[in-house]
Length: 169
View (tube, helix red, strand yellow):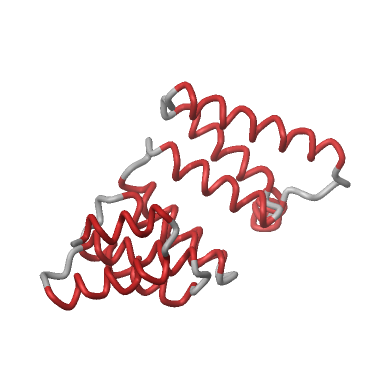
């Protein structure tokens, strides 16, 4: 039944997928895959609070699955809860420091917030985590796009450096 719900999700029938995943959760054991799938469907439907709820439950049931963490963080980001999203990404990276996709997603979130230096650090960490060739190309493309944007941007202070400087003063 979960496989059928994932097929609906894959084909773009998001409302039907929500119903199918909900049926799976009512009829059988509470599976992380069912919560994650329903969270993905809610994400596609732009129902961020329900996506957050389902990804949170999926993460509790299967804390080793990166998709649960990424789904939760991205749902929080879509709700404009950026710092909570960063905490989720960093929490996953604490236990899985070589997870390339999480570094890339976190870099993109930092870029979105305008914290360019931290975004660059995350892309460097992604490259150091031995990505596959397609991942490496994607990372390098993102990095080059950001460098072009950096050249066009007005000077923006490095807030981390200013914070450290103020602490020592």
